[in-house]
Image (tube, rainbow, N blue to C red; front, side, top):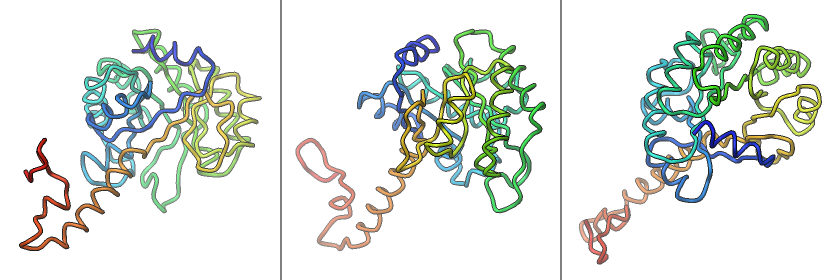
Length: 256
C-alpha cells in the first residue's frame, strides 16, 4: 500500500481523502471509488470511546483502529499519529498495522484542543522527532508527514513555515500546515520544497495541495443520520412499528 500511495501522488493531482470512522465506513469509501482513506484521532475518539479529541488516546487505541480499517480495504490508509508518542515504536506499530502514511504533529501539552492554553514543541525538538521517525521505518515507501499547528494555534505563518522547512530538512516526505487558507497555502508551497497535506477548509481553494483530508467526513454524517433516525423513531406508535422509521426491511420489504 505504501507503493500504491506514492503512485497516486506521482500523478501530480490533488488526492481527496475522506475520513473513515470505522472499518465499515472505510469499505463504503472504497466502494464509491475513492483511492485512499484517512483515520484520525477525532473519529477514533468519537467512534471507539464517545469522547472528544483532547489528546487522551493511547498509541494502542490509534493503531488498532487503523489496523481494522487497513484490513477492511484494498486502498492506502493514512493515519493520525498525534505527537508521535515514542516515535520509533509509533512508526513500527503503524507500519505493522498496514498503514501507508502517518502524520506527526508539533502540538503537545495537557488540554490540547480545549480552551486551555495550547503548547507547541520547540522547533528543534519536533524536527529531531521527525528525523527519528524517518530513521525508524523499515519500509522506505512508508510516508512520514510532518504537521505543524503553529498557524492554527498562534496564527503565525512565519513560525509555521520556519518549522515546516526544518521538518523537511529532517527528512519528512510531506508537510502539513493545519487550517491554512488559500493565501497561506500558496506561501507555504512557494517556500517549503515538499508536497503539501491539508485539512479541507470549506470555501477555500486547495490548488497546490497533494492531499486534502476530509477528516470528519464519516463520523459527522453518521452521527447526524443516526440522530435524525432516532428522533423520527420517537413518533412511532403501536400501529406504526419503529422499524418503519429506522428502515429495517428484508429483501421483500418486510419489517425485520
